Length: 289
Image (tube, rainbow, N blue to C red; front, top):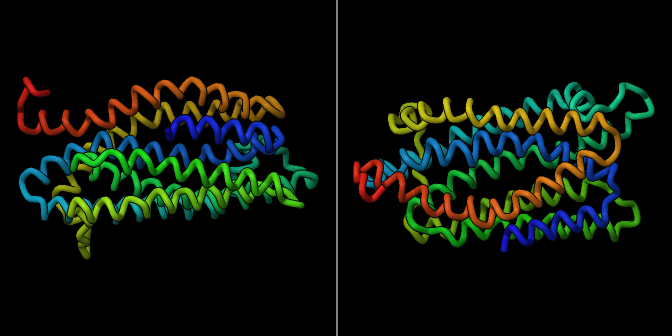
């Protein structure tokens, strides 16, 4: 359902927003999305879920402390990335978006900075949600974490309609849609965490958590390998923006169509299977694994 609604979201963007503006929006959104896949989805599946599964089998209370420590560290790191990104956006955005340094383009640069102002904090929200999703999947809860992207897609579609019906259309509507969708994705996980009795426990100093140190030791090589793919995507976006109006949007839409079956089948099966793989590996049950 989420993937189909995501297709509808992209179709709405393509139908309503002029190509020159979808180019800008999609390129700006690529920036937080790249870090999301590094610090969120990739790190959670490779580093956090196996460690949390092991600790939870031994001591559920310590697992809740690991959950809290991970949230604190992920929140701090992503907040630092967002702060630096916003502070230096005036330097790297014109280069990344291939906007010539010309007084005539000041309005376009200002618009891209406003977009990034709304969309970059999405990185913090979605990475925290990814950690919470990993906990819920380990606890055998899959429906709610898989359903939260539905609300993100609804927010983007609503923002697109607001853009369409506005007397003075602005891409900022889409930036607000991204931020609102990120908030909903995180907040809607809280009742499920309470239901499985796994709300996080906080430490004054999360870096002293020995289980967190083990997760971080797995995270660093995973980030390096995942980073290669994400840098490729950034380079593709840079090349597409340099080709003029349209190519970045076309590349995005084609990629989304290609990812539709991957998301419906491959990623869905992996999300359900990975916590079970982790339990089999930790218990050294090779037959089960």
